[in-house]
Length: 564
Figure (cartoon, rainbow, N blue to C red):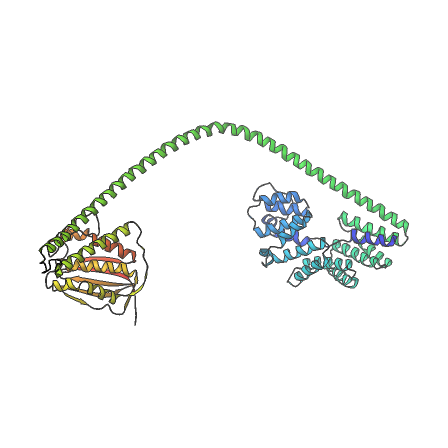
């Protein structure tokens, strides 16, 4: 029974697992300061040094300081910080939090971080004694191309796991491989650790003499290293196995040595803690001096800041009043312009509606009555007048919608020729009445891109103007030509043309451009303003000029494509 108890104590308390030197080195490689100089000294406390101070504090097992510096780090990548955060949680035995950090997909799916994340999960499961999961993660790491140092650390942990699972042959294979590797690299610290593990392996199998040989070799190797903890553990191992072999004198000697190392470690820890407290005290003292000087300096600035603040407030209030005053002026100007536009539109509408309505009333009065004295015979002129009135109201509606941003534009490809033919048909009576020759050519097989209904409004207005200003027996032609990315539709008439003074301000609503047509009526120019708005909504262009031989030419350019 005593032998069994000694075996359990030896196995569970003093089997030395692999040290995470690889993880410490990996974090150091991510540090700009460590690349320039090899130093494990804590640097001044600022953002630039935060990562260096964080990983150095972690290496020294000062997890609270490591967490503090890590929170200040604003320059390192999130993935690297998460890995160090997980290692800190692991050091604090906060296993669930550590696993949450290591299990992130951004780490496991990234080749730059998957190695250290997977190995860390294996280390975590080893600490939690979930040996099968630890084996799973370690074997995943071994499938990758890894540095020798990582491989050896995993081999030590695998040897320990198989020892705990009592698979002694597998455990021995891993430890013997490590012994060979460490001998080649002349690594005394790692050799002492492996010899101690082999001693535990054979002690567990009741092969005490063989265990004693490995412990003795570990003891010799420990003399070459500075690790007090490992020396303590090896001495205790020899004490346990000497007791099992009934070598009480040797056992007492090793126990004394163990207590010496134990006291030395305690003293070293105490000295380190005192040094930490002294450092904290000095920092606090220095900070108090800085705070005193800062308070004195701040008192000087306080009055200045108050004066500046009052000045800024006064300036701000004054500036706000000026801005509000400027806004009121601008609003008054816009309101005045809006009223002018409104008044002009009402003037135009009143003027343009007066003539057709008056003519309509005159025609209805002069029309002969039928024998039953109940119906009126209407001639073609009445229909024309009604059409003119309807056209004007249609233009007015489109103008109102465009100015209110209520006009819906639905663009699509549509054929040009049928649209021109339809509008020609609608104006047949007017064309025939003035005996105008209207021709259409060079617009076959053309598709335009835009809102077809808006385009019809454009063409109707242009044709209406052409008819108005073309004399009896005149000519109107529709033709087309390709210019770059646009198809240019030309509407040419043989009318009176447009005066140069009117031509310059043709599309400006406020400009005075009243011009008499062939019947003596004046045109307001509202239709042309509507035309320009509709063309721009269709991503097109419009240009009007006079032809040298007489008459005007309307050029409408719009996106197109040719069909076979």
